[in-house]
Image (tube, rainbow, N blue to C red; front, side):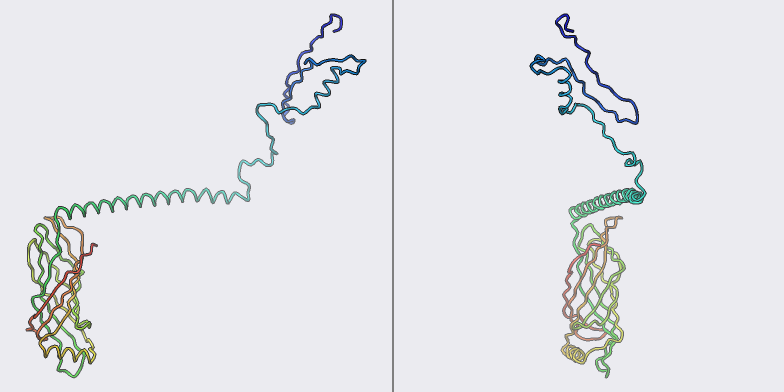
Length: 293
């Protein structure tokens, strides 16, 4: 008041929070009207407190620190997917578990396969280091030929060839087991005369075994040139044949049998005549390789 020369301060305005649910809740800045502002006499056109308040209220208000309330229309808030997207959401939710299960299954399968391959490699390495296996040796000790009549007017033959094969196991600690599924073929000048199976048998370490393999051919038509070459070779007493043998076998250590392997043998041999009493003149058998199964 003007009586005591001092200005009475009015209490500061406080923040007002409106609790009506239908009205957005906002936060208003308080305005202090007691800030000291230089006053000018009314006669000189100075500003009064009322005019200063109206001017300050028109100034842009700086943003107040704190939490802001963002209002979203109620119709844009979904607790469940819209009907047009519900089926897409269900498809995605169904696919994700299936993909995860497939990935886990693939990872487990690859891990098991890797472990098995590693274990097999270790076992093979130990086996070769400890026992040092050697491939078997083969040779032909006798041949008996029947069913080839070169004096006949026809060029069709049905050969029956019996071959005595000498198999040698040079391993000191390993036995050999020759099983089924073998194959043997005999050729003359590239023409197949007969086929059969290599005899199955068990062979102990450091052993030599002679087996008889029977090769049969039925109604084989020879060309005129091949027939003439065969007659000429018999006249010279040197009939060449090519014997090919593919025999599966297993190494045996005491009572333990190893995995199956296949040995391939190619024998070049020459006989003096095409009869049951033929004699082997030359022979050379080469073990071409061993294949692991």
